[in-house]
Length: 506
Image: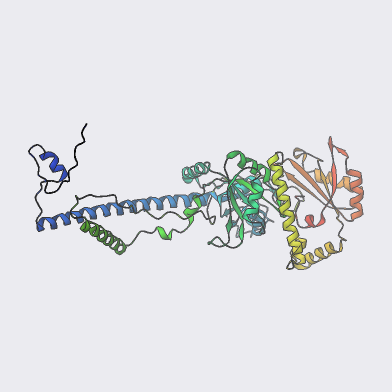
């Protein structure tokens, strides 16, 4: 075969009789436009560009409007999800006592107790709102049925939220896509890396984030945060193994997340998401047209093409900030509980024991123990540590000063005896306290009897305060390992400081 020679082509291209259709597609053989036609063409281009920009602006406004609607719905739903109803409150319980008992589950935004102007007492119920919905759920699960001021609290969801139930269910459904846990009551000396090192024993930790005091993300944390795992099994094991675990001298509260990571951003002010003003829109249109005209002037000889214009989307929502949020929690019931006779004590939330029945939980416990020892040693060895911080007490008033001096002098022998496994919850009646007092009076002068009934864990603890520590020793020797109603009684001396501060959780 002989190769055809490649000849250089030059000169004008003429359209033959059989190629008129193809020539029209290629733009060959067309007559040159006059100056007037060129001006008309430029006007048409400008008009088409104006229409394109207007369509873009309309799409941007629609997206912004939809984003505002979603933000409003999320804000309403989160605000309801972060509220709890507290009923069956004793008249002796005050707002500060409610806050102290519930603040371990998360930061409290507000508390509303209704007061009766005639009697001067509250009406026995309150509405409490947290900053985050997870704190409300954790408080509801932990504090419902707890004894406070001699009455069992009723903690649940507010009843005025059926209209927001669809959006709440949507938020909770979105949260199931992520394997996150909520952690509160975190020691201020612990960092995100410390918390991550403890929880990664259950599985790979995708993200560990503690809420900061400042909006910039710097400074000390606020005592709560979120940990995300890569699978649901690790999440469930972390909740079971680390809830109520003592880390650095504070009991962690760990629960499941009911909001997705981006949900809380809808409560933040979206300053950057505001629509541009008319002047800004006009200036933007002029700049776009000038750039387009400059490109077209450089390519006047080319066929007209309309390329894709860069979309002008509404600015993206900011990254997750665990600041304020709002949330979930339902209807109180009629108060039918009766305070137990002669019991005037306030009991804090029950101390649920963590389930350390897996290798992952034991590894996390070992790591947490190392961190706790490090935190306690740092506090004890700190030059700035005061006696009050080392003893875990705040010196307020004469009683606290005397208590601190008694601790330092090691002379405060306890006068309180705690009896465990003596009776079951269903055995409690109005005569039990008198029976206990009569039995214990054989060993000394009984000053007070307090019965703490944890209905959730089905644990009954009976505290007996004697007049003298020697009487406590005699009662303990006689009652420990003794059989009562088919149960083996466990009698132990209880810490005097904890009893005096209404802490019956030991």
